[in-house]
Length: 167
Image 1 (cartoon, rainbow, N blue to C red):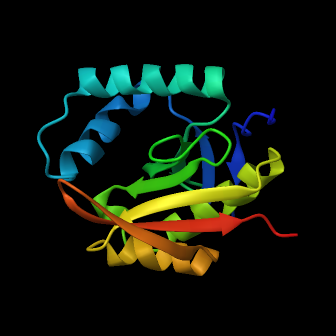
Image 2 (cartoon, rainbow, N blue to C red):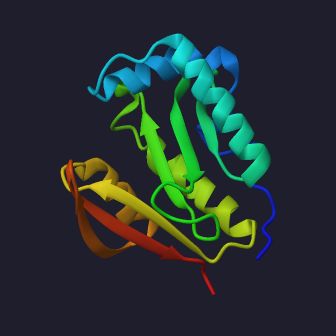
Image 3 (cartoon, rainbow, N blue to C red):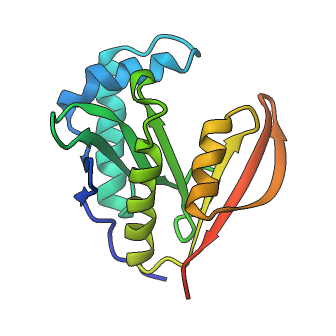
């Protein structure tokens, strides 16, 4: 099936979501380093941005930066990715800088991205979250995702959630 490309600009009451640009590399490196799995350099973040730009061009899905509407400051990203899913039924992913946690930004951005994803013609989305990540599990619950199954990999349990387009 052919889908429309994901929009490159979304507005919410508090956020503006736009594609990543090379100037986003410093905060993106900070975000990836905050995961606690090793230091990510600005140069590596620039490469990841270039990869995401190609992905958006070639696949029609990808990451959008969450920017505070009033300040323009980057808060994190929200994305549709193949990840553990497929291009027809992509995975919703989101990640925020530590100082942006707990303010509802992930829910606000993800809700806008879910609507945009269904506007491309897709009828189902997935999201996978580690069992320890209670805040992300709560975001999915607020968005109406339902728990589908649990799998395990070398890092532990992964909860699969699914959301069907409204009929």
